[in-house]
Image (cartoon, rainbow, N blue to C red; front, side, top):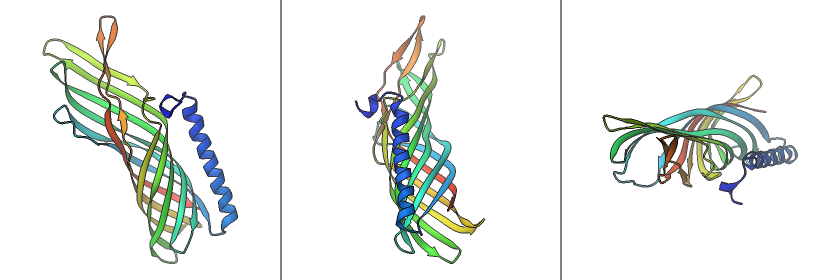
Length: 251
């Protein structure tokens, strides 16, 4: 059994089991290794997009829009020096995009509105470096990699095919269980940490870019008598890309 054919229950149990194991291991290690080790929480807004990986010629034209979602995480930070350390996180992040696709169906120009929504459990491992430091504040950078496990997904397509006389609705509404369960990405970030309310509070920006390709569906259904006719199309190769802004606190 591979990730694409995993039963629905495993798509939830596996990520939660992995997250629980990593989080409990990190917290236990943080308590034993160093009194300088900290943990914290962050949450904020995520602005997600999909980017193409292949030239499709004049087969269709695509206008993309961002999906605005939520991101939140718990993390543990191990300082190696005063300026450098490693940070392990378990995060929930909403990714996806909206696409307006101009294509020909049965030689008739058609505009399709497509929405991809993918929610992930994300597990980043990051190197943190303090660029500028003072007694009460710090400007730092983040660089690393993340493994993501898809929790939920939704694919929706709406459009009309018309020859000027008759109009036919084109639709699709389903999950994306056929899409790869795992996603891998590189992470870059910049943050500003300062003392407030008796703790270290920070504001952080991150850019995350997947290096593996997801093959997202483009199929649609059209009414045919009392039934619906499936129009098969090749999946479109796309990569996840996100920008996020978070507010957090360390303990």
